[in-house]
Amino acid sequence: MRTPYRFLRRSCIGMCRTDPTAWITDHHARQDLFRIGIAHGSIRGFSEGDAPSDIIAPDRDRQARLDCLALGDWHGAMKASDRCYYAGAPERTRFRHDGAGVCLVAAPGAVPKVERHRGGQLEWRQVELDLLPTDVPEAMLTARLPQGPRRNRPGHHRADR
Image (cartoon, rainbow, N blue to C red):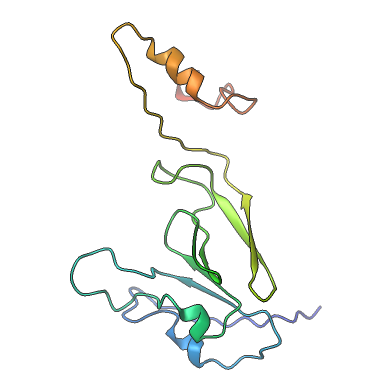
């Protein structure tokens, strides 16, 4: 079975010293195909001073005439532009990003239609409780947490083991 997709492989061993997507701009692929770039890296630096040399150009999707640029590195799903997205981690591992992990699905179009589909089983939430000395914290927390069949399943909590 033949597929209309052509996959190119390009990788950096160890740390990249340049934008890992720079090569895509010079690659001349057929324009009648849905062109997706996939890379791991950041579109901005987080330290003060000079920007690192391995930052992905924030407009790489336009420079390389890509229909969609799918990026990994950030653990939360984020839209960087109409054609550039971070999918985030499929399963959340900590509280930094609320909610469950997602899978992003891109469909061809003048601007790709990108949909989020829940992928993760864990849903992380930070809950703030304003407590008075007479309050019962357990009851207040229980009232703030989502209710439903996925909550408090036997065998899924340390206290149940």
